[in-house]
Image (cartoon, rainbow, N blue to C red; front, side, top):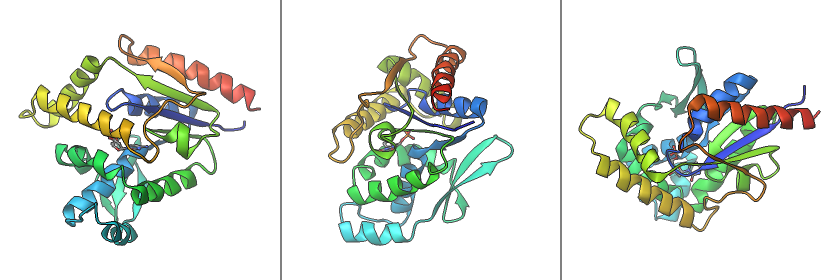
Amino acid sequence: MRKIIITIDGFSSCGKSTLARQLAKELNYVFIDSGAMYRAITLYFLRSHIDWYDRDAVVQALKEIDLDFRYNDQTGVSDMYLNEENVEQLIRDMLVSESVSEVSTIKEVREFAVAQQQKLGKRKGIVMDGRDIGTTVFPQAELKIFVTADPAVRVERRFKELFEKNPNITIEEVKTNLEMRDYIDSNREVSPLRKADDAIVLDNSGVTRDEQLRTALKWATDKIQDAQ
Ligand code: DC
């Protein structure tokens, strides 16, 4: 059976990764969280005190970065590795969340990440989530989904997720961070967050994870049939 590429884009904390992960599992496809790559690059820059507005420093730093996804038997999904270190948990930290959108505006950073993402999609059979996957990384993807949700619902979901790891976090911090990231992601010069013209919109505000999965799965199986 011929495999396809599925892209899932949208604003921060819309549940893109959850949907992408579930969809990949159902279809026996590979799930790739492109945001994890930008987060790992940001972590490297923060740790190495790289001034990301200094182009030469960025170009040099990118040469020192090796990104890899490695399958984790326990979780059933891949973890992000930065220079052989598992950084899957560290990259979800608020410190990284506060800088990742800024780092993601840099042209050289995007070229570096996009080249690796395209390589990962060479053999198709992938579900990749992010901001520019349907517009820039795989404009030829067979199925493009653009996920949206009510901002208040997104803040609530993200807060619950972060509160489990850090009970000191406040809902205001989460709201400010989401608003800031949405703004930077949508207004940057290089491949801003946009719905691809041929993407299908999925608003999951009042929808359960199961319902959302069933809808997306139907779209995917139809597209897979068309591809035969
Ligand atoms: O999906 P996420 O929230 O983990 O992504 C973190 C940041 O990475 C997001 O605020 C913008 C950036 N990003 C991007 O610019 N392009 C992508 N394809 C994925 C993420």
